[in-house]
Amino acid sequence: MTERIIFYILAFIMIVFSLMSVTSTKIIRSAIYLLGVLMATAGLYFLFNLNFLGAIQLTVYAGGIMVLIVIAILLTHHVGFGLPVPDKKHMILGWLAAMIGITISFFQFTTHTFKPKIGNLDDRVSKMGADMLHYGDGGFVLPFEVISILLLAGIIAAITIAKGGIPHLKKRLKSGQPTTVSSSTKKQ
Amino acid sequence: MHGTERFTAAVHQWLLGMFSPGAAHIAEMVLTGLAYLAFFAVAGLALVYLERRIAAFFQVRLGPNRVGPFGLLQTVADALKLVAKEPIGTKKADHFLYSLAPYFLIISSLMAISVIPMGAGFSAFDIDVGVFFLIAVSSVGVLGILIAGWGSYNKYSLIGALRSGAQMISYELSVGLSLLTMILLVGSLRFSDVVQAQSDYWLIFKGHIPAFIAFVIFIISGTAESNRTPFDLVEAESELGAGFHSEYSGIQFAFFFLSEFINMFIISAVAATVFLGGWMPFHIGDLEGFNHIMDYIPGPVWFFIKTGFIIFLMMWFRWTFPRLRIDQLMKLEWKYLLPLNLLNILLMAFFVWKGWYL
Image (cartoon, each protein chain N blue to C red):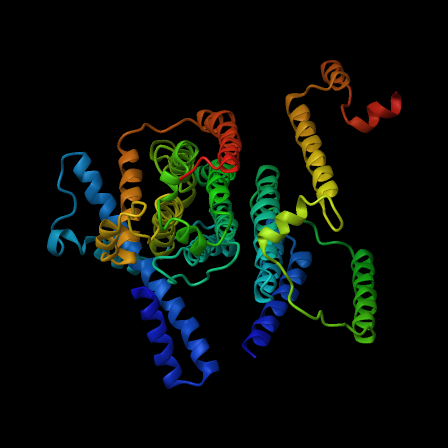
């Protein structure tokens, strides 16, 4: 019973914050509302005893991505800077699309019968770690390694951009031509 | 059964005798929450008092000594003054975010403190991923500082907040990796398992060389993580006024102040739990007589002695090291601590693989 009440409170928070996040005209505020949604999602995971997933949600979304978004906003925007209110046509189209989306998902949720998962979910961290490095049946060593290579590529790309080490970009910077990557690749 | 376990069991029985099981469960949750809030306030006040007394000790002064015996009530009087003060904000500030920011810090520290065992079975939320959960929730606190700096509409606050963002994100890595080094020895992220693994030797003795390196790295990065001198660029008095909380006054300022000291407590408590054995008494192998004598001292006393020792160490740093520049701060983390930490993990993994630990 208590769990049900907590679930409804969290769901209410998620719905209200996600609506506020898309309707707010101040960009930093919508970021904070988005944070509310993500935290409430983490709360749901903790409610379902998926502690590892909840902690991951907190580190990756609340601690990582939201901090990045907020820092990006702090560096690029002015305090009190509001986005312009979209014109009538876009608003109507947006609401229409949202309504269609809600109808489709509502239809799906009411017609589809969900099967409850029988048995205990083994979510021990040690089991997860073993699965992650298991190369037999049901192991995840290949995706794990591929993702680490992807991350390495991302880090190298970030360093290259930060150091300005792309030769043809440097040349264009000197001659004062536009330096976007897309324009330079088109000409080649 | 330890004393603290008996205590929680007695409270549980008492509540079951008074209410139905469902209501007793809710009453337990409320009581735990209230206990943590009370602990939060008392620990914060005590730490501010300690800070001032220890600062005075290092400067050959007396420190607060007029209000109450040994000046013990000085910080209480200060807190009352802060609560009674009118909160004055900036006119053009984003008032919603401005008033929201302190709660981020308070809530994240409260959640972090809930997983630390202060005695046998004496933590609110003993979960499978305890250490990771602690790192996860403490990473939310930095958002509070960023929002406070932005919402204040003050350039010093904003500079302080951005410095803090850069600093806390960088040093979180070292905190996490140095804890991970010790987790290699224990094999579990649950805090009670971490403490239980230290019933023969504390982990810092068990893992000898790599454990000691990890301990030093943890203390350095933990000091940085809680924004204390020599890493207090966030609120460098001589450059930025009070940094991100320049524009706060009254109770909101008190919140920031309190959460800063509680963060120091959390870092010290984690250091005490992971490296120095937490509430576990000091045992030497199978020296029965010595171990029995040590067992007479209750667990929470051990916990607070060890935490107090680390807190004293961190207060000592404050009057020993000069403040770093921002580029030195970044260099220290990314060029020295992080590579050292990664090598240290490899070293520890090798030692664990070979079984070269106590």
